[in-house]
Structure formats: structure tokens, C-alpha cells
Image (cartoon, rainbow, N blue to C red):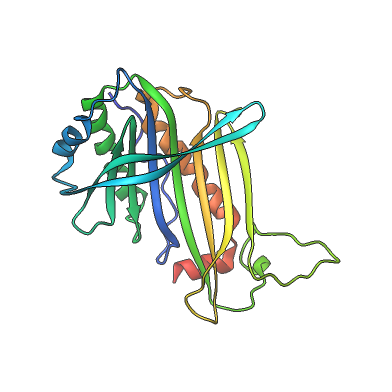
Length: 253
């Protein structure tokens, strides 16, 4: 049985949120060798919500905490994708993997979590995994600031620092930090980069927030939704800490 409170933390509601994509990804400890019939059987359980399906080849990445730091691996893999009619929400199933994505417009946390719950219950009911090797919750935010040039300190608390003696104007940047939680069991990775603006009189940045379980099998399968709720709370708190009231005003418009 999948446990956990479905709504322990109510996210701040913005009229114009910057979220362009949210994804929850599970990687499982299999009970046996991967069965190629699993994706089709999962689709049969979810086709009422996700009637469309397609086969994808994707480049997967996986990060794990080691004594020498964070190790990241990449590989090409097949996935089945099940989509809603509007293709804004979709489920991906691959060998010992389940992901639930939602593109903008974001349906709020209360609208997204039931999709995760239903997909997870369907997958576990078919594949019968032994445990969780990894869970991740990721939000990608595209923040448009209607000014150019921009003083980032007027909008962001998480931003590049350029010391005296260096040119202060930037044409682009990439900034990243990783923060451990729960004695290193979980990691929050924040990355801020510039993006191509849609208009000459604006500056666009991407704030990528990825909270993941860094220690394999550190969370019981029965506690998966509880872990996701905690992850969401921490991502939301970090997001609010990254921005200031000027951005909040833009998001509330």
C-alpha cells in the first residue's frame, strides 16, 4: 500500500507562475528481470487519463552521492510515453523507471499529485518492484524580467557574484549549488542560467530545482508519497528564498 499525506504543504499560489515543467521520477529495485509487457499493462490501467501513447528514445542521466562527490551517468534508453489529449501531462515508463511530467500551465500541486499517485499505484501493481533506488522531484522555472539591462539583485537572492576588479556586465552565466538534507540522504541541486529572451527589452533566466534521493534504497516504497510531499515543501521553500518581492509581484500579476 502507498502511504503518505497527499497534501501536507499548500504551495503559494501565483496568478502567473514561472513553472514550465515539473517531473517526479522513480527508479526501482526490481523484483526480477525487466518484463517487456510491463509498459503495456501499465497503459491499460492509465489509458482513461492518458489515452495517447508513443515510443521514445531518451538520454537518461542519474546522479548518486559517493565519498568523492556526486557521480553522474548518462545512457540511451527506450521509454513508453502515455499522454493526455492536450499532451500537457504525461507518464513515462521504462526498465525499472516511472516518471510523471506536467508542462505549463502548471495545475498546482494539488492537481499534480493525484496523477503521480495513480501512476505509481498502477506501476507497482504490475511490476511489483522490491524497493526504490532513487526518487526525484524537479521544477524548471522560466523567469522573464521585463527590463534590459537588469540588476539581478533587484529580483533574485540566488544570483552570480562578481568581485571588484572584474567587468560587471554579463552576456550570460551559469550558476549551480548542491545542498544536502537529512544527513546527506537527499540533495537539492539549484541551477540558474540565462535563456534566450523573447523580446529585446527583457532578460530571461532558468531556475532549475532538482531535489533527489542520493542514497539508493534509503526510503521505503511505502513512504514514496510522503517523501515527495517533503521534497515539494523543501523545493517550495528554496524557491521563495531564491526570489524577492519584485519577482513575487510579477508572478502575482
